Amino acid sequence: MAIKIGLALGSGSARGWAHIGVIRSLQAESIPIDLVCGASIGAVVAGAYAADFLDPMDQWVRELTWADILGFMDVTLPRSGLIEGGKIINYFKENMSDSNIEDLPIPFAAVATDLKTGKEIWLQKGSMMDAIRASMSFPGILTPYQQRNQWLVDGGLVNPVPVSLCRAMGADVVIAVNLNSDIMGKPRFTRLPDQIPIDEQVSEDLTLPRKLATFFNGKLRQTNLSIFKRFGLSAPDRGPSLFEVLAMSISIMQDRITRQRLAGEPPDVLVSPRLNHIGLLEFNRAADAIAEGRRAMDRMMPLLKDILD
Image 1 (tube, one colour):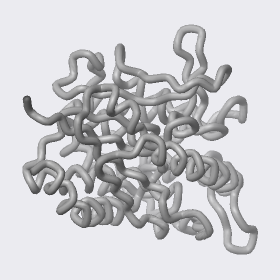
Image 2: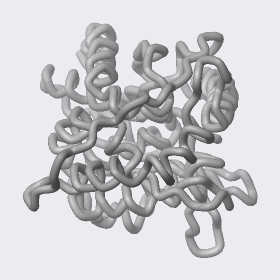
Image 3: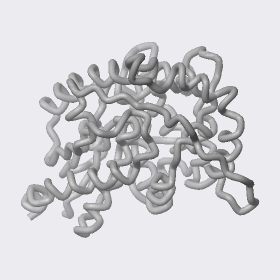
Image 4: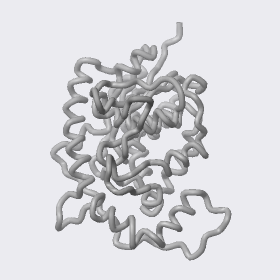
């Protein structure tokens, strides 16, 4: 019987692009990935891999700019979150497909948290995009996702690195990626650049992210941008922003939960990229994150090969 290799991708906001590098390292060594699961940003990358969308995602995230990021943020009046999340999910649906999880070529699952009961929810059926949207609902930032009579939020609250889910899916060997191993005690705040270049014109052949970037470059200065300067991004003389207070507080909690869960449910290989230099909202630094993810997996490759041999 062939050994099943499972990949458990952890939560970690913008640092999650490192997961792409981990997968690239495995592909370079021709090591198959038989199933994938993830929490929060880990669910995004796991879904992309399971749906055979990793190559376009890799290219797309490397080209992300601040304008693109702001363009995907459909800011609402603060209710249950600052961002609705519809724009980014619609982009994924249009470009990545929205297959049912049961129909994906590679088994996939995502972790979410029931906001009312605090229970860990494993999403293994139905729309892949709905599962990703639920798993990435960062409290206070992205509005919760309603599934029937449940309100679901970020899976990282209860299972930041879902090794247990990976085992339950049938993995014999679990490779787990912990994105938050080196951030405690090392505050890292994100600052928005003072100027975002404005494209001179919009052509019809621009991709959707570029069209959004062009539009929001011109509009955000008076509307959304001022909101995110206030709520989402810090200035050195003012200390952490609202977003960073929320994110770092949750990171502290996730760090403690991750340590406890990994002690009780250890993976066969634990990959810990060094990502403290990347801020929680710096989704435009994908190239750095991907490179570090690949380096981290390369460091653990001798152990993985020894296990497989």
